[in-house]
Length: 409
Image (cartoon, rainbow, N blue to C red; front, top):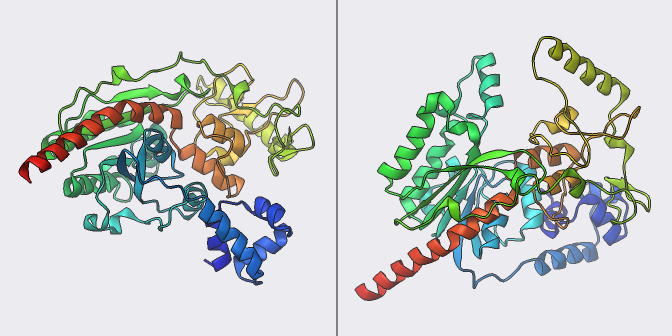
């Protein structure tokens, strides 16, 4: 990585933003990133000043936490909203690292492969959060691997066993609490045996108090049907209950709340919208060839009695689950543009909104990478509410631990 690329990443600017703010063409920015040309000293100083200004002082936070399998930081946003301060981040994907770095200005590097990180090298922390990889347990992931004759669940050495890295870190540091996220299918995978192993490890081997996990549908918070299992645990038995979380009415938000209005009431965002009305760029509209293919594919499976097909939505709808494969054809969520007109994909900004990210969330990567990242992300408001419910119990454990230390001293 060149010095310019690192400075750009830390500043949080996308290529388009950097070009506009620095007064150069996007071609210049790309050449500087590749190291083909050297930018002026003033350019580097401006980027470094921006990165420095974005570092917030949160030393007075209520608790510390680590962010494992961090993706683009959805669980981090949730924990920070409850007063937490992140002291360690691990994420192996370089593009996710880029988006994470653009939105969380830490003065420390992101750790890569967690399997290569010694637990002793991870800072002490009060809470561990992890969205450990879900593909080995998801319905789509299991089906695909069965078709390919490949292992899944804990037998998947490259992903399924990453849960055991969570266990070894919990065992070494004994934080006050943890919050884990995975797909709904985790509970039923391998006839329930996978889930039983996870619960036994957390409860019996590590001795954490783990209330019965809860499956929560993000459609209580965002216009998307997205069910995820939430597992929380505490070092001591506390009166935490998932009944304490507040769920808005299911479907209280609809797609119209996250779609570009295209009427000039929002500022244009380069690459996603065009013109003074901030109309969605034509590049998100499906080509005739792709639209015909999707319709034919859906008709073929409908004739066989299958439910496979595209999801055509309008403003009053709730979308299907956004997946990491959305970049391929966008078929699960296609926005209707009216009769006789080809539908369009969501823009990356609309995907961000669909996952509960605010409009100031920076998207410094290509559309393909952005679609993958938001499809793999958690729905932020769901875990923000869980973190809110956890916080007083975390604080109680920390206070009781501090009191015990004072008594011994």
